[in-house]
Image (cartoon, rainbow, N blue to C red; front, side, top):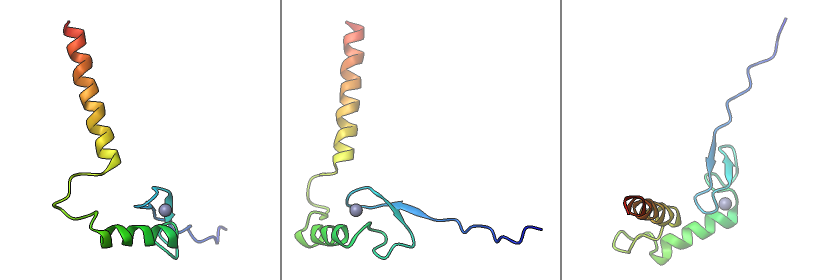
Length: 79
Ligand SMILES: [Zn+2]
């Protein structure tokens, strides 16, 4: 007979600072480490997350650059 209890589903998230996988049971959750938590708090403190500042999300910028490239490629195809 199986007497094993079902393994608890481990929730994971990505560290907002460095994007490493973080276990929900982690001590510094949702950050992977105390260092990343401090970095994130520092961002808040220095106003990086102010709504009035321009977008500085590298992922978003990358995405925008990629879509721009796509548009350009399409233009080339038309040419
Ligand atoms: Zn991290």
